Amino acid sequence: MKSRYDVLVIGGGPAGALAAQTAVEKGLSACIVEKRPAIGSPVRCAEGIGKEALTEFIDPDPTWISAEMTGATIVAPDGFVMQLSSKMAGGKVGYVLDRKIFDRELVWRAADAGADVAVKSRAAAPIMENGVVKGAKIDHAGKMTSVRAEVVIAADGVESKFAKWCGIDTTVPVREIMSGVQYVMTGIDIDPESTVFYLGNEVAPEGYLWVFPKGPKSANVGIGISGKKSGEGHRAKDYLDKYVKKTFPKGKTIEYIPGGVSVCRPLECTVADGLMLTGDAARVVDPLTGGGIYNAMFTGKLAAQTAADCIGKGDVSKKALMAYDKAWRASKMGKTIDRNYHIKEYLIKQPDEKLNEIIHSVSKIDMTEFTTLNLVKEIIRVNPKLVLELGALAASLR
Amino acid sequence: MLKVHRDICGYCGCCVSVCKEGALELIDAYLSVEENCTSCGVCAKVCPLGALEVVHEKQV
Ligand SMILES: Cc1cc2nc3c(=O)[nH]c(=O)nc-3n(C[C@H](O)[C@H](O)[C@H](O)COP(=O)(O)OP(=O)(O)OC[C@H]3O[C@@H](n4cnc5c(N)ncnc54)[C@H](O)[C@@H]3O)c2cc1C
Ligand code: SF4
Ligand code: SF4
Image 1 (cartoon, each protein chain N blue to C red):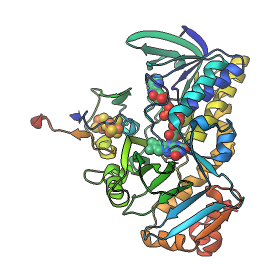
Image 2 (cartoon, chains in turn red, brown):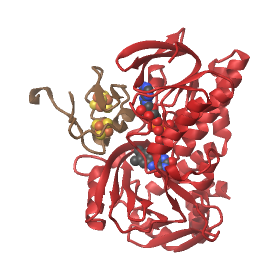
Image 3 (spheres, rainbow over the protein chains, first blue to last red):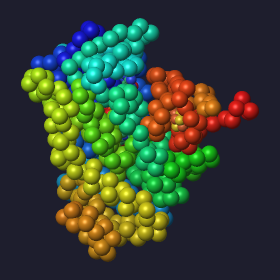
Image 4 (tube, chains in turn yellow, green):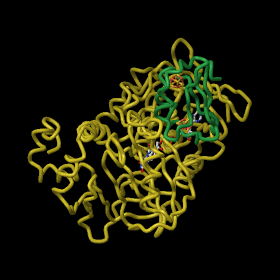
């Protein structure tokens, strides 16, 4: 680690890795600081990602793919099952990753491209001069050093503190934090090619429970519930234990994963003078699915591209860096977050009976393109009544 | 006062994201609580494992 870089990236997750790789590819010097001693571990993720989304950044590689998916299943509160499959015969629609290896691969690529990496190195405070972010104080295995940078890219995940230290309020509202737990289980009977989502207030209030296959007899079995619904005796872990006891009594848990994921609107502004926020730190998770791997990679890459432009022009002010904020909001990702936020807000208000009714209306969907948007469109097509309830939102979906 | 049950905590950072005071920080596998904690209990509510507890002074 040197004492000065063009770009200092805080956090070695997918957002940070893509930011650093892109920065060095643009000819800048860059360093990733990661507080953990190992990249990618412990995992805080169900590891699901769509095929199109993944391949936009990296070609699938069996070393970090646990399983390939050909379909998805949604289980209504009353147990009714809706099957989603791809129109393309044998078509792969998505992957369940092995994020310990995947995250490491991404950081590896950044390092190979020329970025410096420092693990067990925690950003402990920003370096600020006249309100402008100029770098960070790094606690590197107990030794404090100052690292100055033209631009700091905060990619410090759900537990992000860096932006807060710089005066940006990143607090996630209680009702919009998904409080989650997941067990990596083995020795269980599952469909190894299909993800399963369970909905309902008894199963997972204002959230969902998932089974994402990791192999013929193993899966990530997890749950996320709204922070609002969490409390003593009815926490995410209580719900998950109830399900596991009933469904997989003989299964063995080989990994125990708590985690939080934000399903709020993204931060009002994701830049400041000398500072850019990316991935979970910017709260750009898809509010409907809780998926954030793609969004992290997308914003990480975009932030570094903008940083390179701005550094090249000698202006890293908030005004100049705003180009990044504007670009992600206008992107397909930005629009999807906006739309899915409204769909989530509608769905969490529905009682189980209503969810049953909606899911009963379609028992099998063949989708050409496997997206939540297409699923929602199909549901609306067979439930014309929903158009009225969804109002302007429904119109925007067409 | 906020008590962290370290035997239960799985150091995930879920609690850190909801604290508006910024009183929590996850230092790798160690959750630290700063003095500016107001004992509001929001973090204790959302913890997926139930590792946080607001204890009143007399109980300590
Ligand atoms: C239970 C659960 C299930 C999920 N399932 C899915 C899923 O199936 N699909 C999907 O797409 N998304 C899923 N997500 C969301 C996904 O995990 C995140 O959106 C994604 O990891 C965000 O990437 P990131 O790079 O922004 O942050 P992270 O991957 O969280 O990386 C942030 C990094 O920054 C480091 N860091 C933090 N503070 C500092 C500091 N001060 N100094 C140095 N380093 C620091 C952290 O140690 C961490 O390594 C899930 C999340 C949870 C909790
Ligand atoms: S939410 Fe609970 S398990 Fe996670 S870090 Fe906080 S106290 Fe620990
Ligand atoms: S009790 Fe309130 S102020 Fe204290 S750490 Fe928890 S959320 Fe923050």
